[in-house]
Image (cartoon, rainbow, N blue to C red; front, side):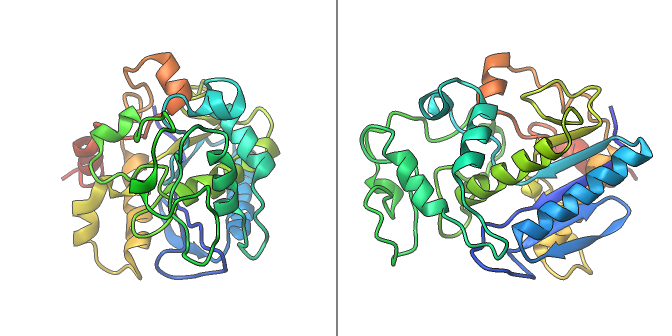
Length: 281
Protein backbone atom coordinates (compact mmCIF):
# COMPACT_ATOMS: atom_id res chain seq x y z
CA UNK A 1 0.00 0.00 0.00
CA UNK A 2 1.31 3.42 -0.90
CA UNK A 3 0.22 7.05 -1.00
CA UNK A 4 0.78 9.61 -3.72
CA UNK A 5 1.47 12.21 -1.04
CA UNK A 6 3.00 11.85 2.44
CA UNK A 7 3.18 14.60 5.05
CA UNK A 8 4.90 14.35 8.44
CA UNK A 9 4.17 16.90 11.17
CA UNK A 10 6.39 17.71 14.14
CA UNK A 11 3.87 19.32 16.51
CA UNK A 12 4.37 21.91 19.23
CA UNK A 13 2.36 22.85 22.32
CA UNK A 14 4.05 26.25 22.65
CA UNK A 15 1.91 28.90 24.35
CA UNK A 16 3.00 31.68 21.96
CA UNK A 17 3.97 31.89 18.27
CA UNK A 18 7.36 30.30 17.65
CA UNK A 19 9.65 29.48 14.72
CA UNK A 20 12.83 27.44 14.52
CA UNK A 21 13.69 24.53 16.79
CA UNK A 22 10.87 23.15 18.94
CA UNK A 23 8.14 24.70 16.82
CA UNK A 24 5.86 23.15 14.19
CA UNK A 25 7.62 21.66 11.19
CA UNK A 26 5.89 19.99 8.25
CA UNK A 27 7.79 17.68 5.94
CA UNK A 28 6.51 16.36 2.63
CA UNK A 29 8.25 14.09 0.16
CA UNK A 30 9.63 16.17 -2.75
CA UNK A 31 9.07 19.47 -0.89
CA UNK A 32 11.28 21.48 1.43
CA UNK A 33 10.22 21.40 5.11
CA UNK A 34 7.82 24.16 6.13
CA UNK A 35 8.01 25.94 9.50
CA UNK A 36 4.75 27.30 10.95
CA UNK A 37 4.48 29.63 13.97
CA UNK A 38 1.14 28.55 15.43
CA UNK A 39 -1.18 25.57 15.60
CA UNK A 40 -3.86 27.65 13.88
CA UNK A 41 -1.51 28.25 10.96
CA UNK A 42 -0.71 24.55 10.84
CA UNK A 43 -4.41 23.71 10.72
CA UNK A 44 -4.93 26.04 7.77
CA UNK A 45 -1.86 24.66 5.99
CA UNK A 46 -2.89 21.02 6.45
CA UNK A 47 -6.46 21.71 5.38
CA UNK A 48 -5.09 23.26 2.21
CA UNK A 49 -2.92 20.23 1.50
CA UNK A 50 -5.89 17.90 2.09
CA UNK A 51 -8.07 19.93 -0.27
CA UNK A 52 -5.36 19.85 -2.96
CA UNK A 53 -4.94 16.08 -2.65
CA UNK A 54 -8.68 15.46 -2.84
CA UNK A 55 -9.00 17.73 -5.88
CA UNK A 56 -6.18 15.86 -7.60
CA UNK A 57 -7.62 12.46 -6.72
CA UNK A 58 -4.40 11.50 -4.92
CA UNK A 59 -4.27 9.59 -1.64
CA UNK A 60 -2.63 11.45 1.24
CA UNK A 61 -1.05 10.16 4.44
CA UNK A 62 -0.51 12.65 7.27
CA UNK A 63 1.66 11.49 10.15
CA UNK A 64 1.77 13.50 13.38
CA UNK A 65 4.30 13.02 16.16
CA UNK A 66 2.11 12.91 19.26
CA UNK A 67 0.09 10.16 20.93
CA UNK A 68 -3.28 9.58 19.30
CA UNK A 69 -4.55 7.63 22.31
CA UNK A 70 -3.93 6.85 25.97
CA UNK A 71 -3.27 3.67 27.97
CA UNK A 72 -6.12 1.22 28.54
CA UNK A 73 -8.83 2.38 30.92
CA UNK A 74 -8.50 6.10 30.24
CA UNK A 75 -10.98 6.43 27.38
CA UNK A 76 -13.84 4.66 29.14
CA UNK A 77 -13.37 6.66 32.34
CA UNK A 78 -13.14 10.00 30.55
CA UNK A 79 -15.49 9.59 27.59
CA UNK A 80 -17.72 6.66 28.52
CA UNK A 81 -16.44 4.08 26.03
CA UNK A 82 -13.11 2.31 25.40
CA UNK A 83 -12.53 4.06 22.09
CA UNK A 84 -9.81 6.60 21.37
CA UNK A 85 -12.04 8.59 19.02
CA UNK A 86 -14.41 9.23 21.92
CA UNK A 87 -11.48 10.90 23.67
CA UNK A 88 -10.83 12.93 20.50
CA UNK A 89 -14.37 14.31 20.64
CA UNK A 90 -14.13 15.02 24.36
CA UNK A 91 -10.82 16.86 24.12
CA UNK A 92 -11.97 18.88 21.10
CA UNK A 93 -14.97 20.05 23.11
CA UNK A 94 -12.93 21.09 26.15
CA UNK A 95 -9.56 22.40 24.95
CA UNK A 96 -9.28 26.15 24.38
CA UNK A 97 -6.51 27.10 21.96
CA UNK A 98 -6.49 30.51 20.29
CA UNK A 99 -4.86 31.84 17.13
CA UNK A 100 -1.83 33.03 19.11
CA UNK A 101 -1.25 29.59 20.74
CA UNK A 102 -2.66 30.53 24.17
CA UNK A 103 -4.32 27.43 25.55
CA UNK A 104 -5.69 25.83 28.70
CA UNK A 105 -3.91 22.47 28.47
CA UNK A 106 -2.61 22.46 32.05
CA UNK A 107 -5.96 23.48 33.52
CA UNK A 108 -7.64 20.85 31.36
CA UNK A 109 -5.23 18.15 32.55
CA UNK A 110 -5.95 19.12 36.16
CA UNK A 111 -9.68 18.86 35.49
CA UNK A 112 -9.21 15.42 33.93
CA UNK A 113 -7.16 14.29 36.94
CA UNK A 114 -10.10 15.14 39.18
CA UNK A 115 -12.13 12.49 37.37
CA UNK A 116 -9.74 9.77 38.57
CA UNK A 117 -9.04 8.44 42.05
CA UNK A 118 -5.81 9.28 43.82
CA UNK A 119 -3.41 11.75 42.22
CA UNK A 120 -2.81 11.81 38.47
CA UNK A 121 -2.46 10.42 35.87
CA UNK A 122 -1.24 13.67 34.25
CA UNK A 123 1.73 15.51 35.69
CA UNK A 124 4.10 18.35 34.89
CA UNK A 125 3.42 22.11 34.86
CA UNK A 126 5.21 25.45 35.09
CA UNK A 127 6.04 26.38 38.68
CA UNK A 128 3.92 29.54 38.61
CA UNK A 129 0.68 27.65 37.93
CA UNK A 130 -1.21 26.88 41.13
CA UNK A 131 -2.95 23.66 40.13
CA UNK A 132 -3.10 21.30 43.12
CA UNK A 133 -4.72 18.57 41.02
CA UNK A 134 -1.79 18.54 38.59
CA UNK A 135 1.43 17.50 40.38
CA UNK A 136 4.67 18.99 39.12
CA UNK A 137 6.53 15.66 39.44
CA UNK A 138 5.51 12.23 38.28
CA UNK A 139 6.69 10.69 41.54
CA UNK A 140 3.89 12.51 43.38
CA UNK A 141 1.18 10.53 41.60
CA UNK A 142 -0.52 7.58 43.23
CA UNK A 143 -3.73 5.59 43.09
CA UNK A 144 -5.07 6.80 39.74
CA UNK A 145 -5.33 3.22 38.47
CA UNK A 146 -3.94 3.60 34.95
CA UNK A 147 -0.88 2.07 33.26
CA UNK A 148 2.07 4.35 32.65
CA UNK A 149 2.45 3.42 28.98
CA UNK A 150 0.66 1.99 25.98
CA UNK A 151 1.65 -1.41 24.64
CA UNK A 152 3.13 -0.05 21.41
CA UNK A 153 5.64 2.11 23.27
CA UNK A 154 7.55 -0.99 24.39
CA UNK A 155 8.62 -1.42 20.76
CA UNK A 156 10.09 2.07 20.47
CA UNK A 157 12.70 2.99 23.09
CA UNK A 158 12.82 6.72 23.57
CA UNK A 159 9.09 7.34 23.57
CA UNK A 160 7.79 9.35 26.50
CA UNK A 161 4.63 8.57 28.51
CA UNK A 162 1.63 10.60 27.40
CA UNK A 163 0.95 11.70 31.00
CA UNK A 164 4.07 13.91 31.07
CA UNK A 165 3.09 17.47 30.11
CA UNK A 166 6.17 19.55 30.82
CA UNK A 167 9.98 19.62 30.68
CA UNK A 168 12.40 17.87 28.31
CA UNK A 169 10.96 15.25 26.02
CA UNK A 170 7.35 15.60 27.12
CA UNK A 171 4.64 14.66 24.60
CA UNK A 172 1.54 14.96 26.76
CA UNK A 173 0.93 18.61 25.95
CA UNK A 174 1.38 17.92 22.24
CA UNK A 175 -1.35 15.27 22.46
CA UNK A 176 -3.76 17.54 24.36
CA UNK A 177 -3.37 20.28 21.73
CA UNK A 178 -2.79 18.11 18.67
CA UNK A 179 -5.73 15.72 18.97
CA UNK A 180 -8.31 18.56 18.86
CA UNK A 181 -6.54 20.04 15.83
CA UNK A 182 -6.72 16.75 13.92
CA UNK A 183 -10.32 16.27 15.08
CA UNK A 184 -11.20 19.58 13.41
CA UNK A 185 -9.29 18.62 10.26
CA UNK A 186 -11.21 15.35 10.05
CA UNK A 187 -14.52 17.13 10.61
CA UNK A 188 -13.75 19.63 7.84
CA UNK A 189 -13.73 16.84 5.24
CA UNK A 190 -16.60 14.51 6.20
CA UNK A 191 -16.14 10.96 5.00
CA UNK A 192 -12.76 11.72 3.41
CA UNK A 193 -10.36 11.51 6.38
CA UNK A 194 -9.83 8.29 8.36
CA UNK A 195 -7.82 7.99 11.55
CA UNK A 196 -5.57 4.94 11.69
CA UNK A 197 -5.89 2.46 13.32
CA UNK A 198 -9.28 3.47 14.73
CA UNK A 199 -11.09 3.43 11.37
CA UNK A 200 -10.84 1.41 8.12
CA UNK A 201 -8.10 3.04 6.07
CA UNK A 202 -7.42 0.82 3.07
CA UNK A 203 -9.62 2.90 0.77
CA UNK A 204 -9.68 6.24 2.60
CA UNK A 205 -8.57 9.23 0.49
CA UNK A 206 -6.78 10.77 3.48
CA UNK A 207 -5.31 8.88 6.43
CA UNK A 208 -4.09 10.36 9.72
CA UNK A 209 -1.54 8.27 11.63
CA UNK A 210 0.61 8.61 14.72
CA UNK A 211 4.33 8.56 13.95
CA UNK A 212 7.61 8.71 15.91
CA UNK A 213 10.22 10.76 14.01
CA UNK A 214 13.08 9.43 16.17
CA UNK A 215 12.53 6.04 14.55
CA UNK A 216 15.15 7.29 12.06
CA UNK A 217 17.45 8.80 14.69
CA UNK A 218 20.72 7.45 13.18
CA UNK A 219 19.84 8.88 9.78
CA UNK A 220 18.80 12.21 11.32
CA UNK A 221 22.13 12.49 13.16
CA UNK A 222 23.98 12.09 9.87
CA UNK A 223 21.77 14.49 7.92
CA UNK A 224 23.24 17.81 6.83
CA UNK A 225 21.85 21.02 5.37
CA UNK A 226 18.80 21.37 7.61
CA UNK A 227 18.10 24.39 9.83
CA UNK A 228 17.40 22.16 12.84
CA UNK A 229 16.83 18.57 13.92
CA UNK A 230 13.05 18.94 13.65
CA UNK A 231 13.29 19.86 9.97
CA UNK A 232 15.54 16.89 9.26
CA UNK A 233 13.22 14.48 11.06
CA UNK A 234 10.07 15.43 9.21
CA UNK A 235 11.81 15.46 5.83
CA UNK A 236 13.54 12.10 6.22
CA UNK A 237 10.51 10.31 7.64
CA UNK A 238 8.20 11.72 4.93
CA UNK A 239 10.61 10.46 2.29
CA UNK A 240 10.93 7.04 3.93
CA UNK A 241 7.15 6.57 4.28
CA UNK A 242 6.65 7.71 0.70
CA UNK A 243 9.10 5.11 -0.60
CA UNK A 244 8.16 2.18 1.66
CA UNK A 245 5.49 -0.47 1.17
CA UNK A 246 3.15 0.55 3.98
CA UNK A 247 0.88 -2.50 3.81
CA UNK A 248 2.46 -4.37 6.76
CA UNK A 249 2.93 -1.16 8.74
CA UNK A 250 -0.77 -0.30 8.44
CA UNK A 251 -1.92 -3.79 9.44
CA UNK A 252 -0.29 -4.55 12.81
CA UNK A 253 -0.98 -8.00 14.21
CA UNK A 254 -2.69 -6.73 17.33
CA UNK A 255 -6.14 -7.23 18.91
CA UNK A 256 -8.83 -4.95 17.49
CA UNK A 257 -9.84 -3.78 20.96
CA UNK A 258 -6.29 -2.74 21.80
CA UNK A 259 -5.94 -0.78 18.55
CA UNK A 260 -9.30 0.95 19.03
CA UNK A 261 -8.41 2.07 22.56
CA UNK A 262 -4.63 2.56 22.65
CA UNK A 263 -3.87 3.08 18.97
CA UNK A 264 -0.52 2.22 17.40
CA UNK A 265 2.54 4.02 16.04
CA UNK A 266 3.09 3.71 12.31
CA UNK A 267 6.41 1.98 11.76
CA UNK A 268 6.69 0.34 15.18
CA UNK A 269 8.75 -2.80 14.61
CA UNK A 270 9.77 -1.66 11.11
CA UNK A 271 12.72 0.64 11.82
CA UNK A 272 15.05 -1.21 9.45
CA UNK A 273 12.48 -1.30 6.66
CA UNK A 274 12.01 2.46 6.85
CA UNK A 275 15.77 3.04 6.91
CA UNK A 276 16.12 0.82 3.85
CA UNK A 277 13.35 2.68 2.03
CA UNK A 278 15.10 5.96 2.73
CA UNK A 279 18.42 4.66 1.40
CA UNK A 280 17.59 1.88 -1.07
CA UNK A 281 21.20 1.58 -2.26
